[in-house]
Length: 190
Image (cartoon, rainbow, N blue to C red; front, side, top):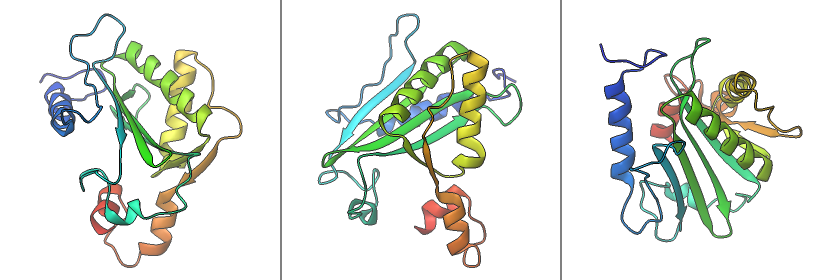
């Protein structure tokens, strides 16, 4: 078995990275980092997306018509190596609106040093846009970030953060209509 601390298969991580790289199109503004000096992350995507020309891979048509999508909202998602005490972040992404476009940033971290760098980037993004939208973020993402910040000795999530957790809203509306309310189910049905 070829695994990293936290029990994540290296081959599984490589498949996920390759899937992310395939989504990057020339001229999209996304920049995968391949040859990296010490201290730079293996994958650091910073992509500006114009909804008028975005493919359906980026946004569903309904999302693009939301007129109330404010520039102060920060959509946040984490992928972690597990749920236990030794788990860490291996992929984080944030999305926010800039004028009539969206900016997507994703960071892959191979080790705890890179995780510290990602946590600093997440903190900076939250400080710029303190209304954070997640799916199960109140129960998982935000407490996980807090624990990892303490572990790294970096600090805390800024005071005054506002959290919009979509999972309770989806459960309230669809619990009797869907077999479950996992994120993948919401993606399929919405």
